[in-house]
Image 1 (cartoon, helix red, strand yellow):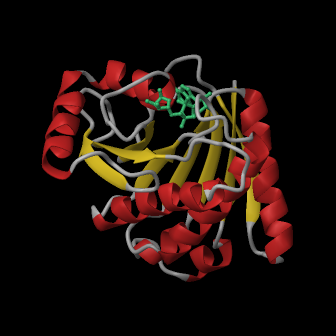
Image 2: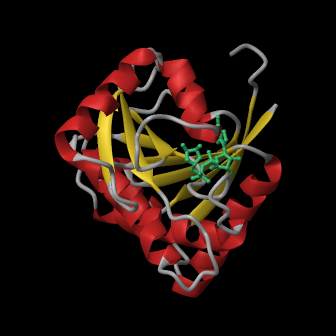
Image 3: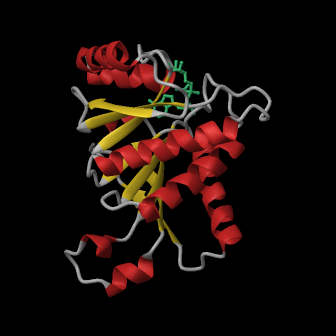
Amino acid sequence: MKTIVRLDLSPQQANRVPAGDPVGEGSQIYFEGGDITGQTTDAIVNAANSSLMGGGGVDGAIHRAGGPAILEECRNIVARDGHLPPGEAVQTTGGKLKAAFVIHTVGPIWRDGMQGEAGILTSAYRNSMRLADRLALHSVALPAISTGVYGYPPKAAAEVAVSTVADELLASRSLHQARFVLWNSEMLSIFVQAARELQQRRKAEHWSFTTLEIDDSNP
Ligand code: AR6
């Protein structure tokens, strides 16, 4: 069994608006463990580096699973526009992935927290979400950007990630679902805890959390 936590940001609105109206679907953030490359969302966000030439971690996994077409598109983007600055986002197709698009962004390298790291991490999530919305996508899967090789402390990263993604979902036109796909159960509980604390800080009593137990024995 796999545990997935769903956060409904607008359940009251969902009850009021007739079915079939896109607004009536409300906005949800899901939190789950696992490998992001298997996601069936419209797009997957990649924690890349400025060269867009691939690497380790989630970047390596996405290029391996998606095949060489993604790297080829990245090469063309860099040839045209140069390196991708930290905090910015660009899209390629998803290659062999189930997701139609990969949105490549670059998080900050953590130094001491005083070098603008939080602002860059906010921009990386914000620009990824806005790009997905501009592409008229409905759903996007996101990793814990910068918390691996780039060394961002997980709790601080989770606070930025959850608050930025919630704000962007509520402001978006077409994007209604964000799925945080976290590599291990510790990161999963840090992200869920960050969401609960955000709810308290914002006094957002209408937000509701649901824990779903999914049978994933027959993928
Ligand atoms: N699915 C979901 N999450 C994953 C996966 C996966 N398949 N693999 C790793 N993670 P990282 P960064 C988690 O290092 O810190 C690359 O070399 C991982 O446990 O992938 O932004 C790039 O090319 C961690 O929590 O990205 C850059 O050079 C999170 O994803 C550099 O690393 C991010 O870890 C970017 O570093």
